[in-house]
Length: 389
Image 1 (spheres, one colour):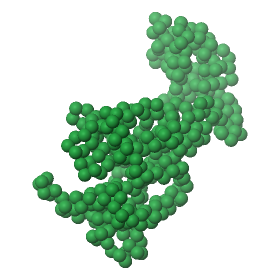
Image 2: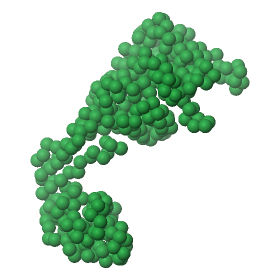
Image 3: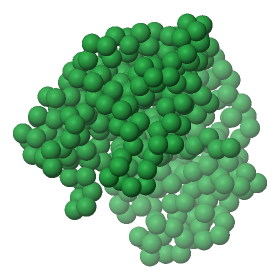
Image 4: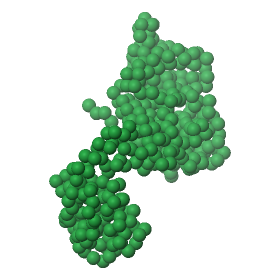
């Protein structure tokens, strides 16, 4: 990904120093193809076993193949031609032609001393700064944050700080889950199971209880016979549809729920010293969704299917962007999000810091966005694992 490619190496990096002072003239003299020099220099890596040295150069093997010679012989010739320098302490040839390199302690000490006196620790700004939008944290604000949310929050914040340090423009956007089915569950729970005294004392705790209770009631009412359906699930989905349609009562309750929910989340962010540039939740994109579906249909990316609207990903695989009841999906919102970010911030790349379980979703989302016309921006899923136990 682009954000990795832009990393600049500090002065103490062996590959960066040696390619300027020692191996380059030797390789240029021995290699019959100058265009391969950059590839050969990229084969200087940190040594896997520190007992063998600090770095290991692996270019003797491919170079020997080009020269039609034995790799150990080519490696030995390279070392014989190395001029005296103040960087390398010892070198040796191992195995099929690996070159082991150990650096001088005095040179390392000089580099560390120079880095310690540099406010950037020897890291140069990016030569060609880019614009990144980083989508991270993204909790469902209808329930309190838990330890699992720390993964996306901390990884995303770290990426923001690193890229800014490197000189890039970074837009940190917290894509809050503030408009989905979970709020339909809260609305149904509020209207049917509310403990008014508990809500008045601690609204967030009571809303969390309602969320869990509605899930349990829905599970208890689940019927294996599909034609009978689930009356509780149908009811809270209906509340979600009404919210999305602008129902006055549901919108008023949503506005009532949001401040205490957000304060609960923001208290954690303050403690972590995490700051976002924007908090554009799903609700922010709701007014855009009808136009997104319309445009996708007009451009042939989406198609109608039995009163619903889908994006066909393959012969037997589709992504739903508008349900039969008119409600929209996460895919629709995410496509609206990509469009808004490109139109507003014109980024070179968008990084979505979300756990690996959403891998297929993002694969299909990015493919749909490219078909829609967003080929000019890099879309990357920064994946990570789950908290278990």
